[in-house]
Amino acid sequence: MKKYLPHIILIVVLGGAIFMLLNSENKKSRKQFNERLSFRIKDKIPYGYWVAYNNLKYLFPNAKISTNKKEPGYWDSLSVYDNKQALLIFSPYFYPEDEELTKLINFAKNGNDVFISSIFLSKNAQDLFRINTSFFDYSYLFPSKKDDDTLHIYLQTGSAKNKVEYGYPGRRLTTYLGETDDAVTYKLGFDELNRPNFIRLRTGKGNVYVHTVPLAFSNYFLLHKNNIGYYENALSMIPNDTKQLVWDEYFLFKQQYMHENPNSSEGKGFMSVLFQYPGLKWGFLSALFLLALFVFIEMRRKQRYIPEIKKPANDSLEFVKTIGRLYFEKRDHNNLCRKLSTYFLEYIRNRYNLVTAKLDENFIKTLQYKTSYPENDLREIISFINNINNVIITDAQLKTFHQKLDEFYKRA
Image 1 (cartoon, helix red, strand yellow):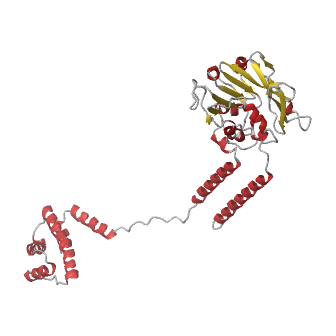
Image 2: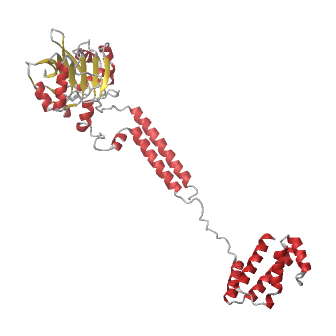
Image 3: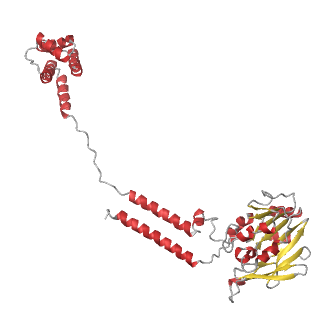
């Protein structure tokens, strides 16, 4: 079974990959409508803002167009001291701090325009603009007719105050201005019940535009029939001699996902962002599965355990050492020297084929000739062997005799 396990695993992995590929192709073929409310200029999905941002250069050919993600007053492309500048803010929520709101108003007073398109405005912004946007249209949540969740809005154009209707079969999601101060506001747009949803407020030398239907600038709305006219007429309120035009994303990233998008990564970690996209999700899970599979396969023992074989011990040498210690401890130095002599003479017979029965001058000369060992040293060894039985050998003599024999074995 272990032999076929890698093949089985490979088949399972390939089968899973083919299944995911076919499943992905089926999803593409179904072409499901993406209803995610993006509000981002890089998204080409229905409720993204790619069309609105990329057509600004046609409405304002003389303006330098850029984006901003910094809080008011810290812009890279705008100056609080210059005029003929415009700031466009598109976000489902516009919740500025008091200091941020003050900087936006001061920017407009210097002869600039601030265009705010948001469904919900904070209380401090409503109080400053003298409006009330607390009237939220919830009718789209409980549609009783097929076209209840559709958007119909009107834009007032020309000096004759003509109202042009625009609409699309998409998300309605809108508020209207229930209360406005007619002394400081000029109404530019309305919903199907003639309630204002687009106004202009004069401040200093500039203007602040408040618009409560940001989905009217989405890709879906602008590409539906002739709705691009709404985009052109609404933004034509900004002077065409504007020198600097900035699309602001600060308030979008500050508030959007916190309030509306439950799949946001804010507070949920980076994995929630990864799992928002099916391709990244399945790619990550596949990589994780393959990693676990690799670890599992590598955990298998690839061959049987080979025991360590110890080097055989030289027992004969140990035996000799043991016998030597025994003789030395008994102080029988003569007997020990005779044993060493016997081993030495046996070595001479086997190694040099010499007769050792008579250790005389002739023997010494012959041994010196065959070994090239110093003659004086050989005479000392042979003389000691011949006199072993005639004297009592001391420790020092035993040690010296052993050293001379050892030196002979090494050099001869």
